[in-house]
Length: 239
Image 1 (cartoon, rainbow, N blue to C red):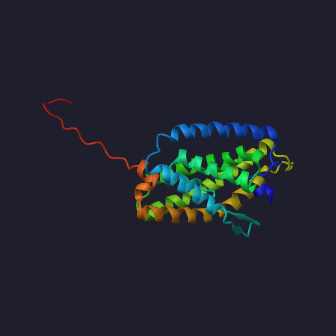
Image 2 (image 1 turned 135 degrees about the horizontal axis):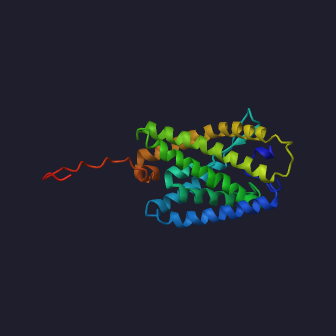
Image 3 (image 1 turned 45 degrees about the vertical axis):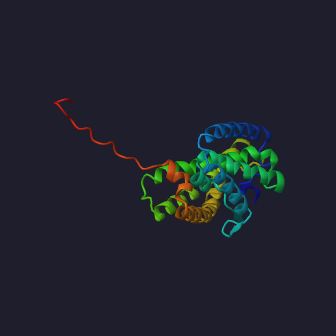
């Protein structure tokens, strides 16, 4: 059960590896703060607070994954990336993880760097890269937006789970007997099912917001479709 948890508990990964990822998470979050300040405006600032509060609330609701013997909840990387962008989105998820660790004991405090790296950084980054690709391929209709949100959420959860596999390979405290492939497969399978639940929640939320206030969906504003350059008329024999 513990090796399947995305909220890594104290003692699952050794101290030196946890310290390295804590430093990495701090450095990347600092960059997110500096980069995210450029995006903050009258719409994004209050939206960031709402997104963080929504992710925090929905993460409290677990749904069982009977085939894997675990339960899952919204990670929020894809949702945050779509609504407030990758930089502010990563900060929103990180704040939620910090509060959960300090107040509710969900994930070890010494493992915060690991959890933030997996769920706030890797999950959000993977989701936004896929969002940027899909929104340039799919039509910008409700169906296209819903598919984009669903697929990016599923992929982000699986990518985040494989971040844990990498961390366990670097500093896991229990010897798996070289069966890292088995751990990766188990994590991917369980979190694929969790990702489907997350995808449905993300798609429903994003499409609902887009129906009422499409200007509040960061991805629709930032990832505008390419406009072909107008033809330049040739005059006076010039080329």
